[in-house]
Image (cartoon, rainbow, N blue to C red; front, side, top):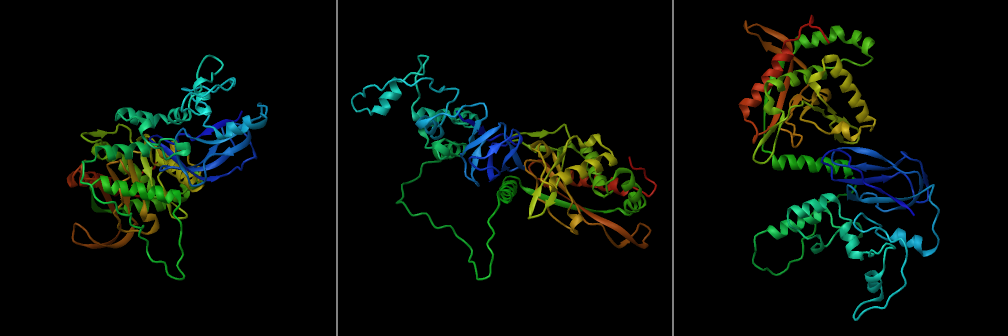
Length: 442
């Protein structure tokens, strides 16, 4: 019999994934750990390795379809399985398959007589044994039993009978979205009956001759959903300071060639910015936190996400875990590593999970002012802008050309106020302004 491949959990808090593209077709052979599909989630795009070796019997999920973690997405006939003959094999491929709650039938019983008002199929399901004195489940029981653990837990928490809900998933399965929609409808206040009205057509912009229509990719849609959620749920505020980084510029210019020879990577400003942010988060831990309904959770670990711009209009945020464990050299290595993996589409779910604070670097693209959207559910995000030379009035009232950088922080106004944000931002500024050409890099 064929074995099922299920949608894995590609990262913490990920409950579903989208089959962006199948890399194998039905009838093709597949080796264990060979990629069979490209899967998109709201956190990562990754290739899905096959846990089995054998022949692809059936692809159960069309490209572009989103399914929950644990859902069956393909059937594979493994090499050590003898092919079954006749209709039994076709029945297997069409059926929902066995579950822990309802084991597969081991032997087929003889047909039994149907009761009054009962079809022969129903009577057979009622009487047929599993070879061990058990009972073969009905199609409805199979549908309910194949609900994912997330769905069953959510239903139990809200006192919902899954059997009351019409499933929209594959094979009529009840999905998490079905449960949530049912709960919203049940808890909505009663309203007066109104004559039914046809749903208005989806409003589209007018497309003129010569325009190009680009379908939204699953990655772009995931970004849109996350950014919309962040702006919808977190009241954003932002503030800005400017830093005189002339000493840092001279330090980098003096050390970059030797650093490249020694480390094999370019010395950029980003490790200095991340280091300054990390040390400042230790002084102001409220920015390394999350909003949790009626409480604020201050994160102990400092895991810094680095926003990486990808070709094709995509953005991804790989995470440097325990960033406070690294110096400038260590951060430069880790940043170079995660950026290369991001641009080569080699990030794993672990590479993009667990972030507690995000650093955005639009200055690398020439930006001088920006207002970034918080990476939900974090408390804040720091943006470092381009370093530009401009005339500055110094403390002795003289005018000099200095290398200046704008630093902004967007923050969740439920968690902190402008004063706390500015104290953090000035701590970052103070550290960046402290570098001189004589400073060490370690």
